Length: 145
Image (cartoon, rainbow, N blue to C red; front, top):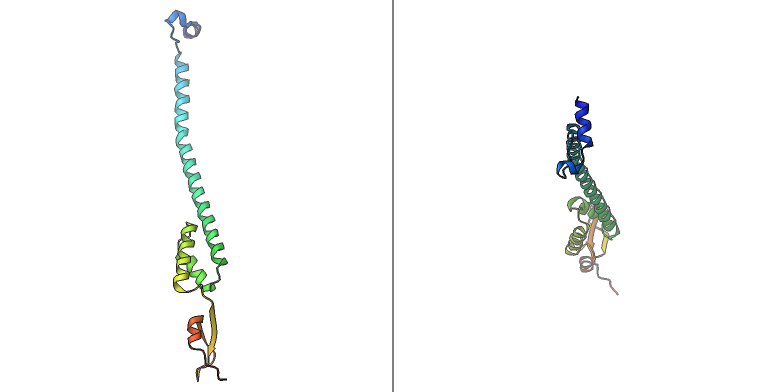
């Protein structure tokens, strides 16, 4: 009997029902199940997008760090200063890093050529002193003609 009822619902035409289509309970269940499954998949899409954004940020941070390392290696300053700059300054924004390094290099006078000489201090052998050109010129021994 129920099969007859289902076949009658399926065979009814819209004209006989005032232009409305009738659905069987099985069709309604299927439609609802489909919609629910689509809704359940949406958070997964959001999670994927969040994961994608996190990966993109990590990749961008690595690229910026690499750009900072390349920039710092191109500078003609002491290797010790280079490593301090890389450790102390934020490398997430390479342009900001470059500006900070340039200000520090100029402010500290690291962009001036460094002269390394040994000072002949009595009782001390091979004392290593480093100074920039201006200071070294001021303390140079005067030559006699």
